[in-house]
Image (cartoon, rainbow, N blue to C red; front, side, top):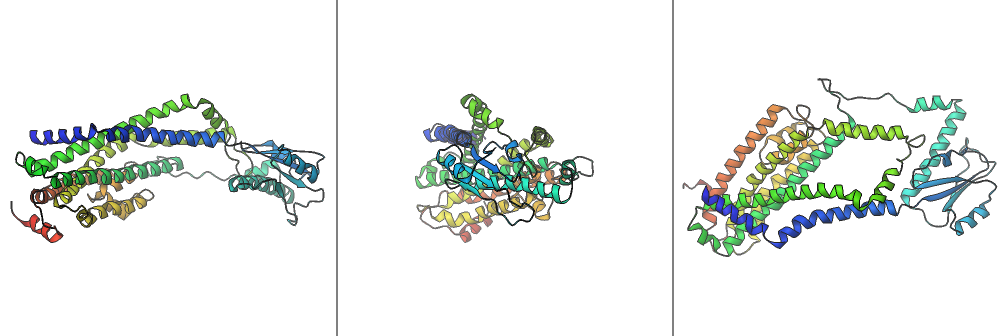
Length: 446
């Protein structure tokens, strides 16, 4: 055990002390933070108001367009203006576009069209916002006029009964919680998928470098091949775990620095109202209710369970696949391309797990999701998609225990098999290894 820790310490320090480790570990979160800050800057700083003048001689809109603003599109009601005078205002940069409604305009028969005249081309998003605002007001006017309804009756018709999803235990399963569980499950599963590939490949390349440089021959004279393989796996896994923790701490810490760096922009972004609803803009009450719903959904998610499961499946999945990647690295000789054909059986279960996860985040109790969350080669990715929905809603306690037990057994089994391959392959040179050769190594007695 002491020799394994010595090898793990060597692998850990040899990578942590490199400049590339510092650049990727500290530089990547700063780069992400910088891109995030630039997105906020350009989203808020460059969102100038688009002013549309409305000359409504037929009184179709009844000044309702100018009553509400979404922060980007500004409608201004004007009187005693002609199309020629409004075009002059566009040329003088006083307005960006205008809508002229003649006195003989008939809103009921749908024969007359409404023209939005601008000096320059209007973007597709701005175009859709203008069209939606105008259409909403016209639809409301038609319903009020043709059905002889009051404004209160129309608002009542546009409102529907609230639909609530609950479990058999009486716990409400809100849309906000379902959406957040979907996002957390997908992000967790994808992150483990990313980790398995990156650090598993790192183990394989480390083994390949030692073998091709003949360093392994010297090390094997002092330690057993299995000890060397396990030490490399633990050392590189520790690098990945430390790097991941630093990323989390930096990203969370930089979030608190954002209000200090861009205070004016954040205040301006928060001051912008929400997008208008079907019959008008969203009220402050609706916005507060939406924020309260998100906070309630966050409170319903069992973060302790998710974080605990993430650490377990991160370590279990890494050790399982790292041993297989180490075994492949030990079979490669001078040509690194030989590893490509041997990696296919290892990478296919990871890719297959991502396919199952796509189904599991939306339907965590499907048969394929249950199988994928228990099968050791796919459980590190699939189970995170299910456990985000909670216990027992997304996964039962028995399934979670069975999945963890199978992953531990799978790790012990793959480590034992990889050790048999590694022991022979690390000292074999000059012969191209095939799957038939590996099969012979596995059945050969020690």
